[in-house]
Length: 304
Ligand SMILES: Cc1cc2nc3c(=O)[nH]c(=O)nc-3n(C[C@H](O)[C@H](O)[C@H](O)COP(=O)(O)OP(=O)(O)OC[C@H]3O[C@@H](n4cnc5c(N)ncnc54)[C@H](O)[C@@H]3O)c2cc1C
Image (tube, rainbow, N blue to C red; front, side, top):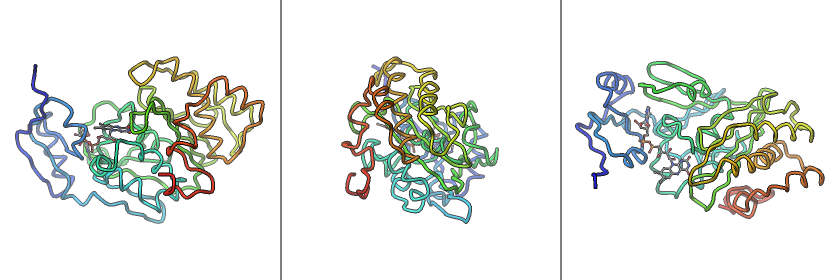
C-alpha cells in the first residue's frame, strides 16, 4: 500500500502576500497553506509550503460599502460574525454550521475554501449568490463568478469581499446525515433588483442563475415565476456520486430552490403549488425540524 502523506520540502512563514506571490511563481510545486485541512488528505510533495498566518489576513473588516474577509479567516469566524450575517440574513451561518464540527470550522479557512472551488462547497454556493469579489495579489479584484470559471490560478487570495446591499437571502441544503457533505445546496439572494440563485454540490461546482435565467423577475415572485424557477434548476446538469444520483439531485433541486426563494422573499406557497412540489418531498434533513434552518420567531442560537 502506498503512503498517503503530505510532505513539505521547506516551510516559509511570509510577512505579506507579495512575498507569498513571489514564492508561488518560483516553482509550480510551491503551495499556499490555508488551514491545511483539505491539503492534508492528499498524498503529494510540496516543494515550499507558504504560510500566510503572519500576513494579517485573519480579520473580517467592515467599511461603509463592503465586508472584507481576510483569506485566513476561519469558517467559524464567518459563521459567528454578527454584522456580516445580519447583512445577508444569516446565509453564512446556515451555510457552514453543518460542516463537520466546530474544531474543523476553527481551522478551515475562507481562502482555502474559495481557492479550491470544490464542487460540494457550501461556502462557495453562499458567496456566489451575493455581490462577491476575490482580491488576488497578482490579478487584483475579480468578481467571484469570474474566478469560479477560471482554470488553475497561481495567485494568492488576500480577501473575499461582500458588497453591501439590502439583501433578501436564504441558504438551503440537503444532507443525508448531519455534518455529512451536502447532496445538494441552493442559495437564493435578491439584490440590485435581481434574483441570484446558486445550485451547488450537483456534484459539479456551484452554478449561478440570475434574473430571467432563473425564471424570476419580481422581488415577491408569482407562482408562475416559481414554476419557471423549478424548470430552470431542473434543466441544469447533475451527476451521480456517493451523496446522490443525478436523478435524485434533479428531483430535489426544484423544491429546494423554491424553498430558498420563498424563504428569502418571505412568501407562502398556495396549496396548489405546494401540492405540485409535494410530488417530491424535500427530505426532513432540509426542513425546520433540522438545525439547518432557522425557525421563524426563534433566535438561531436556540436551534443550533
Ligand atoms: C472531512 C472534511 C469534510 C468537509 N465537509 C465540507 C462540507 O460539508 N461543506 C463544505 O463546504 N466544505 C467541506 N469541507 C471543506 C472545508 O470546508 C474547506 O473548504 C477545505 O478544508 C479547504 O480549506 P483549508 O483552509 O483547509 O484549505 P487548504 O487545505 O489549506 O488549501 C486548499 C487549497 O487552497 C489553496 N489555498 C489556501 N489558501 C489560499 C490562499 N489564500 N490563496 C491561494 N490559494 C490558497 C491551497 O494551496 C490548496 O490548494 C470539508 C473538509 C474536510 C476535510
